[in-house]
Amino acid sequence: MDLQMIWFFLWGLLWAIFFITDGFDLGIGTLYPFLGKTDTDKRIMINSLGPLWDGNEVWLITAGGVTFAAFPAVYAVMFSSLYSALMLILFALILRGVSFEFRSKIGNPGWRKVWDTTIFIGSFVPALLFGVAFANIFQGIPFDRQGVYHGTLFTLLNPYGLLGGLLFLLLFLQHGALWLTIRTEGALQERAHKTAAVLWLFLLVAAVLFLAASKYYTKLYDNYLAHPLLFLLPVTAVLALAATRLLLKKKSYMKAWLASALTIVACTFFGVAGLFPNLFPSSLNPEYSLTAYNASSSPMTLKIMLVVVSIFIPIVLIYQIWAYKLFSDKVTEEDLAYEEAY
Image 1 (spheres, rainbow, N blue to C red):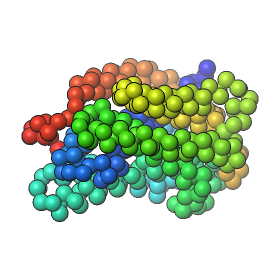
Image 2 (image 1 turned 180 degrees about the horizontal axis):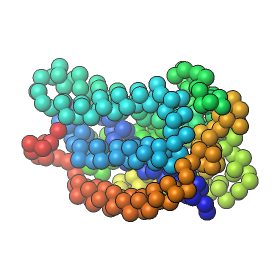
Image 3 (image 1 turned 90 degrees about the vertical axis):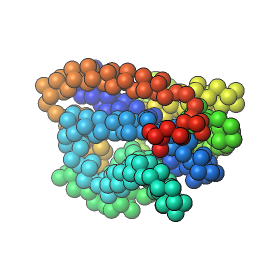
């Protein structure tokens, strides 16, 4: 395995970790106005992810940083081609973070309603647009030899892109509902359980449609037909999705959440494996596509970075696992009395 292939795998892995970690709090934020029947419910939902959400977004910075350092040409063309979508995602994430901090500063119902709305918007928009962006990458972006994008934001909102957005949104919604079953109790937990069960059916339909549409809109299956062992990825996604439903029915909530996380990883690598060696394919001409080989940094840069990530990524993972374990108890009404609570 050469350096470019290793970094291509790490690039996909970092995005998968981000989708696992930040996915559930984007899902909770989107479910927020529907499951939060009272102000107490809403505060419990926020505090269920309160100590974790900002740490989760470290993986977004890491994934973007790796793209910049390992594949600078991809970073340049990607962030110019997808500029509008990525700026909307960035503004939404900023708005969401501000909303968490400001919502409980004043007890006025009108004040809280404003921030409740922005929590929803700041969670829904990234969940949808991340899916739209990656689906468009899977099918190819219209850019030329100079990396100039020939399209607009609405070019990205094509049927396959929107289907990818819907798939990501449903993945994150179910992931978030499952997290609430772990961190809450009583009526809120029961609503989260029922919501996760209903979402599972919609997610199953969306996943089947996306797999079928990928055959017609993309060339992802070319790698699968050339290397049949890769079909283990979509099979893993299907089995993990089935396990999520079974474990939810048994009320094994943590195991169901982990199965949901595996579903997200398998779905991410379904696309990543199908893309290789392309990182950012051009729909105008395959010769314009940016690959792991024609867009990578120098071998020396890749070697130095590999040493750095081999040291620091495990440290970050260990710290984050410790944080998740530390804040694994259920959030109760009594916890909302603490000064540190949202």
